[in-house]
Length: 309
Image (cartoon, rainbow, N blue to C red; front, side, top):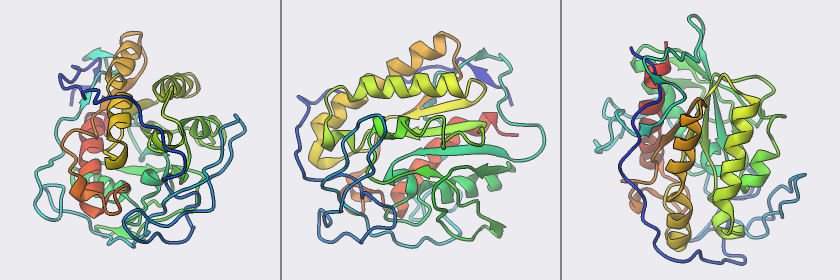
């Protein structure tokens, strides 16, 4: 397959729906991946998130997901167990090289090392293993060998489609963009990945949305600097119904941030995880259910498939 160093940019843009909402202590993704289970529509209040060395405040009031256990198999060829409308095609724009530029982050032999980087949505609260389960299955189904990296406590099924599932990740519940950045380069890049999947900013929408897009830009630049040979796949964030205006304002500039860095030669692509994501696939109004995680996996896979061996 042809590799893209600069791919076409998505036409779609998320509209800015209004001023950024301010939330004092309503919610953040749970402050500990092993924390108590949430309850009710909004979930119970967690004890607090990790404090970063960069000065970000701890999460003082967080929803924790139910942390349900996931099945090893995942969805069928369509990407969703209920026959949903997401297939592993499209969804990514912009890359570090022009069409036919020959950028190949993955090795010719052995698995391509993928680093899932983010917060509780990367951990997989609400469905054990999160999007990583279906992403791994899609890679296997299409003849690709991948593995996941990360310093955090492994989770997910032991087997997927008859193959041992790599349970590593670099997601920490309750963390903001600044706190995620504080894990780069260590421990997040202790083992250098070939591909980085970044979904970050949900907790910022609650703990302080002002300036979140600038913080994400700084994190992207840090990843480009510390992992210059990796493909960095940057997503906007999935819906957060009670902070819809803040999410829209945060998401809108992200495609441009990615495009400008791709045009400057960075190996970076954008994936639109927001578009088409139904709130009915948020199991607790924050974290995806199994269908939602499978939807995310299909978009991640579409973005990286041409780079896999």
